[in-house]
Amino acid sequence: MRPPWCLAPSASTLRASGALIFVALAAAASCRREGPEAPPPAPLHELAVTPQLAPAPLAPPSPGAEPPAEPSPAPAEAAAPTGCVEQSAQEFLMRRSYTPVASHAAEHERALAYRAERYGAPPGRPFEGLPAAGENAVATTFFGVSVNLNRKIVPVLRCVEEKIAAECGDGYKPHALSGIRYKNTFRGGEVSNHLFGIALDVDAMLNPCCNCVEPFRSNPRCKRKASAPEERMAMPYCWVRVFERYGFYWLGHDALADTMHFEFLGDPDRAGPPAAASAPGLPAPGRAGTPGG
Image (cartoon, rainbow, N blue to C red):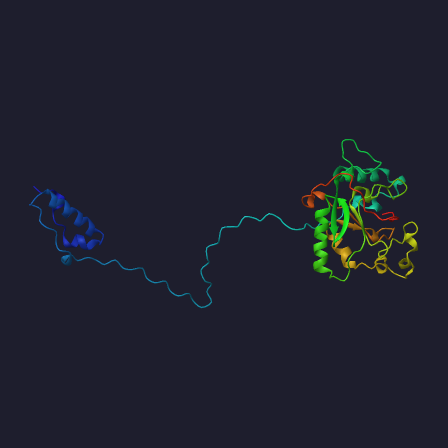
C-alpha cells in the first residue's frame, strides 16, 4: 500500500506556493523507490505554478537627494610622530629668572640642578653620581661649520638648520661657531650654559654682544644707532624666530644684548634620540676671548 504522502497533490495545493513544487518532486521520487504502484509525477508543464517575481528595480533618486553613503573605511592606525618637535624655552631656566645670583640663590640652584641632571655636571661644580658635561660632548656641524655640543641637543640643532634653510633663504652663512667650554665666562657665581654644551655662539664679530665685557662692547657695530639689538647684527632675524620655535632662547632679549648667543632651554626629552656619544673630554673649539654668554 502506498504511503499517504505518495498521493498526488492537488493542483490547488501546488498553486498555493511555488515552493511546494520541490516538495512534490521529492515525494514523487520517494514513491518511485517504494515499488511499481507509485504513479509517476505529473509533468511539470501541467502544473500551474505561480512564478517568482524578480525584485523591482530601485527607483532613481529624486533631484537634489543625497546619494547613498559609501561604507566608511576602517580607521587607519595613528602614525608615530616624526620630524621636529616645536617647543618653548622654559622660563625658570632663563637668566632673568635667577640673576643676580646673590639675591636669587635658590632659583639659580634649581636651574643649575636641572641642567646638571640632564646634560652632566659643569666644570668646577661636581654633582654626586653625575658624569661631567664634557663626557656628553660630540662633534657636529651647523651649516657646514664644525662645533662641539652636548649630544642631547644635536637633533634639535639639525631641525633648526633644516627650517632655516627652508624659510630664511641662503643669504647668510655662519663662519665661526663656539659651543661647549671648560671654563666659566660668567661672573658673580652664575654658570654659563656653554659649560653644559647647550649654548651656541654664531659669528661673534658680526653679531655683537654690546653689553658684554671688553673687547666685545667695543665692537664697531655696537656704536651704530639702533632701536633694538637685532639692528646691529648681520644674522637675519628670521634665524632668531626659528631657533626660538625649537626651545632655544636668544640672549639678544637679555640685558646683555648678546645677539650671537642661543641656548637650548627646552625639554631635551622631547628633542629626539641624542647623537651618538664620542670620546669623552672632546676639546672645545672655542675662540680666544669669547664673550660672557
